[in-house]
Structures are given as structure tokens and as C-alpha cells.
Amino acid sequence: MFNTHDLVLVITIYQCLLFALFLITFKKGRRVSNNLLALFLLAHAAISLDILVWFGAAFHSFIEQHLPNAFFILRIGHWAEAPLLLFYVRSLVYKGPFFKKTDYLYFIPFAIALLDYIFNWFILSPELKDNFLANYSLSTESIQSRLVYLFREVFRTALGVMCLIEIRRYQAHIKNEYADVEDIDLKWLKLLVVGFLGLRISAVVVSLSLISLYEFHIPLNTELMGLTGNYVFLLLLSLLIYFSLNSTQVFSGIEAKHEELANAPPPPTTKEIEEITLYMATQKPYLNHRLRLETFAKGTSLSPRRVSFVINRHFGKNFFEFINSYRIQESKNLLADPSKADLTMLEVMAKVGFNSKATFNTLFKSLVGQTPSQFRREHSK
Image (cartoon, rainbow, N blue to C red; front, side, top):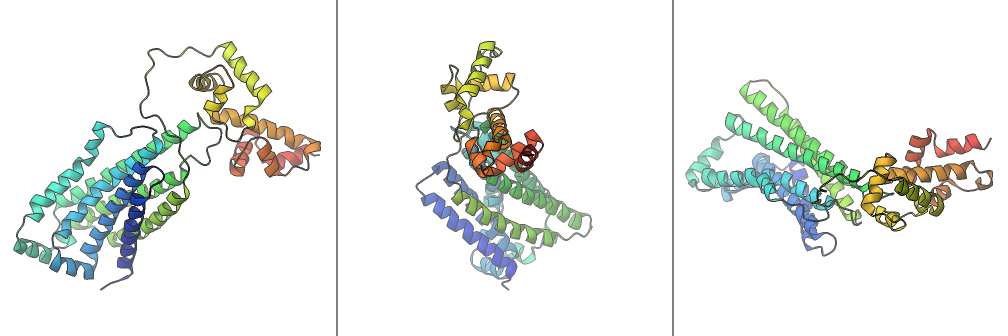
């Protein structure tokens, strides 16, 4: 019988296939990233269809009669999904090549699962397949199969953690090159990866619960956890589609390969420190809303890498923190000036170089200990 839980899986499959088709045929943007995201969605469509085939009564009966080979082939999608998500994330956060020869190792479980399907199911006679399906239930699974499922979910969880590490590296990197990071920090992707990681951790719990239930006879409600995961993934998928379509900006990626310097760079010189300090005081480059490290360096005699090194080593800040500390000081001057009392907070924010009200308020409170409004009221007395 067709039920609401089946409908959620059908909608998930439909969205995955439709969005994957759109990404593959879309001619703009990062083609490699689009294709990897499309493959990730196709892998999850296979996973959802696998769940539907095994546990949706109406679908199970139809597949058993007409397409018995579909029962195990779809399960290999579980092994492809996490590596594809990792490479999608890497394709966004790296400028150049992001795939190394050793990365093929992530697909070894996928290859093993495919070979297992061929030799342990596909080549079986129809009679053996019918007999297996007629007697199959979760309770008849072997302990070896349950341990394989547990390893699969741990593997997917580990790659989810690697996705988060890559995003965190990227977010740290852009603060050394940009004074404004609101539009390029991939927060939306981090939130979604956290959501997917939560589902993977939940799947580990389900796998452990099945072992507990059928091997040690400790009853746990695994069905509820599994169904909840299906609903949550549909929500995350909808958010992924929304944010992906609305995130059209070009990301500043990390260089995939860096040349190692033979020796450590020399410490900042007094001349370099004075040049940067004088440039900030006289030219006020921080008022530029689109200021980047490369643009900043053009106003000095130093290379972008050297500017970044001097700021990091001498001032103890990354480029983002360094530039915005000057912007906050400039905003304090405006807010404390009685002749500027008619300026709105948005006008103050814009005059000192900020693009985001949220960033302005957060940094002001962090550095000053008060909100901009509180600071203005206190200094207007």
C-alpha cells in the first residue's frame, strides 16, 4: 500500500533527478562543481529508491516480479554519495586542481560493493533470487552484513567531517585576502554539510541499534529514526536547491598546491611596518567596500603575500581583522561626532566601508563592548 512515507521518498527522488538534470545542462557557473553536485544528487536518488524498493510494499512487490536485479544495485549509491559530496566541496574551495591520485582510494568501497553485487546477486539464478526475497527480512540479515552497514555509515560520516574541515580551511583563507567575506564564505554550504553530517551520525546510531536489536535482543525504535532521516533529507535537499540557485557569486578558492619556501620569510622590517601604517593613515584604503589583499598591496611597494605576512606577524591579525579594526575606529569617530548626529546607522556603516549591517554590528560589539547605538547614546550626552 502506498503511504505518506513512500510519497516523501518519491518527492526526494523527483527533486534529485530534476535538479541533477538542470545542473548537467546548465551552461554557466562552475561546470565541474555542477556536475559533481549532479552526481551526488543522482547517488542519493539511488539511495532513496533503494529504501523505497525494500520497504515500500507496493514498490517491493512490483520490483520483485519485474526487476529483481534492482534490489542490490541501488545500494552502491550509499558508497558513492559521500565521496561525491567531498569532491563537490573541494571544487568550490580550491582554485585549481583539487583531485589527487590518492583520492581514488575513496572509491574503493564503491568498487567492492559493485563487484559484490555482480558475483553475489546478479549472476544468481532466478530461482535463488526468488527464494532469497521470499524469506528476507531485517531479522534474517547476518552479523557480517550488519557490520558492513555500520562501516558504511562510519565511512560516510568520516567524509562528512572532512567536508567541514575543507570549508573551515577556506573560511580561514579568505579572511587573509578579503576585508568583506559575507558573500563568499560558504556559510550556506557549511550549514547544509552539518545537516547531512547529522543524518550520517543518525544512520550510525540506526546501524548500532539494529545490531543491538537483532544480535543482543535489546529493543530500540529503529524505524522511527530511519523515517525521520528521510524527512530531514527532503528538507535539506530543498534548502540545497534554494541556496545553490541563489549563490551565483564566484568564490575565492584556495590554491590547491603551494610552493614550499626553502627558508622561512624574514621578519617584518620597521620600514615595511611603517609603510603599511602610513598607507592606512593617509590613504584610508579600508573605506573601499570591495577591498582585497591584492588591491591593498598595489598601494604599497610590497607583494600581497608579504603584506599578509607583515599583518599576521606584526599586528597579530588576519587581513579581515586588520582592515575592519580601522573601519570600527572610523565608525566610532563618526558616532561620537555631534556634527554627524544626523547620519543613520546604515549611512555610518557605508561611510566606513562595511557592506553588511550584521558584520558591522557583530564586529563593533566584539571590539568596543557595546552596540553602535549604545556607543552613540553614551557619547551624545
